[in-house]
Image (cartoon, rainbow over the protein chains, first blue to last red):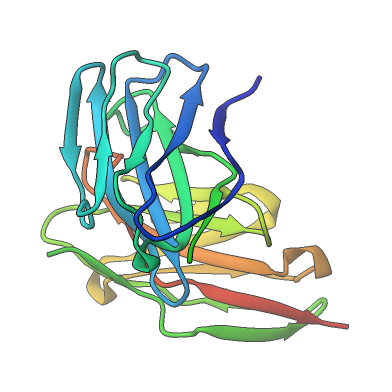
Length: 114
Length: 113
C-alpha cells in the first residue's frame, strides 16, 4: 500500500518561481488537505478538499492554490514563491467525517525559497 | 476559536522512566482530540485519538492519554520510555470535519541513557 505519496521530497526555488507539490492517495479517500510545518508553530492548515471538485481555504491559504479534479490527486501550487513559504509541507487524507476515520499523512516535502 | 497549547517545548527523560506530555485545548463543543508522533525527517503517525466514551484512551507503542474535560486537558503518558520514543509529539484538536485539525506547537522528547 502506497498510502499518501508526496513529490518532490526536497525542492529549492528562487523567489518568484512557481511550482507544484504533488499529492496522491490510493485509498479512495474523500478528504484531502495540505498543512505546512514551521519551527515552533506546529502544523497549520493551508487548503482542504471534501471531494473531487470541492476545495476550501484553511488557516494560511495566501500564496497557494489547489484543485481537486480527481479523488486521488490534490496538488498544491505556489504561483510566485516567497522566502516566507520556506517550510515543510504535509499532505493528508481520510475517508470521511465519521469518528472512526483516521487521517493519514504523507512523509512531507521540504521546500526552500531563496 | 479552537486552539491547542503544549507548554513544554523540550522534555528530557531517562530511559525506563515514566513520561507525561501536557496538552491543553480550547474548543467550543465536544472536542475530537489526537496525539501524533513525528520522527526526524518523517511524516506524522497517529498514536491515539479520543472522540467519546472512556476518558482513558490506549494507543500504539504503549502510550495512553486521559481526557479531562474540567481541566481542558488531554495529557499523553507512557509508564516506561524507550530510546526509540525520542521524537516530536503533537497534540491536535478537530471538529467533526477531520481535515481541519488545529495542532499544538509540539514537544520534543529527548531520551537520555
